[in-house]
Image 1 (tube, helix red, strand yellow):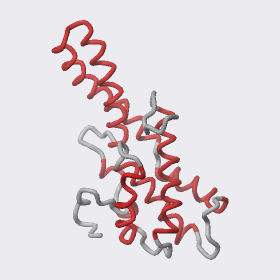
Image 2 (image 1 turned 45 degrees about the horizontal axis):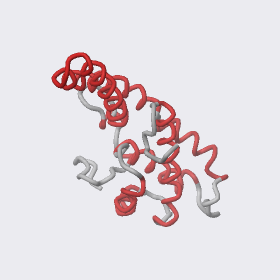
Image 3 (image 1 turned 90 degrees about the vertical axis):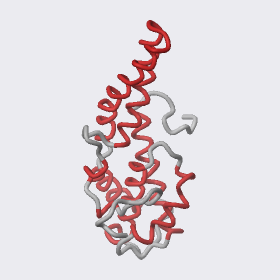
Image 4 (image 1 turned 180 degrees about the horizontal axis):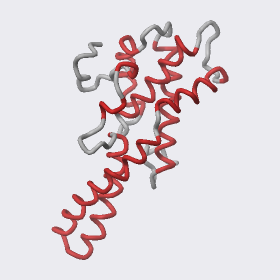
Amino acid sequence: MNQDRPAAKGEVKNPVDRDRDDDRNPLGAHPVGTAAGAAAGAVAAGAAVGSMAGPIGAAVGAAIGGVAGGFAGKGIADMIDPEMEDRYWRDNWSERSYIDGGFTYDQDYGPAYRYGVDAYSRYPERNYEDIETDLSAGWRDARGESRLDWDRAKHATRDAWQRVSDTVERATPGDSDRDGR
């Protein structure tokens, strides 16, 4: 993948090649936090203002809620710290049932876990199953020196995705990942 150009639509950029701040909007909000916070804030503000001022009030409330929610969501996104995730997986990777002997964390599984964390931060509103094909296609470029083919890497990628999704869901009201929990 060319590091000098932005990722194309549907393409997951190698997490090692990008700075965490590259994904932030001009207000400094991370897309995960902006989406989660904006949705919650817009609904709450729109409902409150709309109930008092009718349809126009609901529209104004939704706009105000979106901005406020974006700032609240920034806090959620900041909870998803790639370095913290890396430390977690470094300490826990060898206990996973899909780990194959002969592979290491630093060279092989670490890039797969980082790929899952990065993918969630890029596509927080989507289900893993909906983008697995895209992730599979992007793994060749994202894997770096990893010796894992996608059939082995996908388990670690999914595991990291789910851990981040669960972190976000615990921090936001409702069923943010629409898994019924």
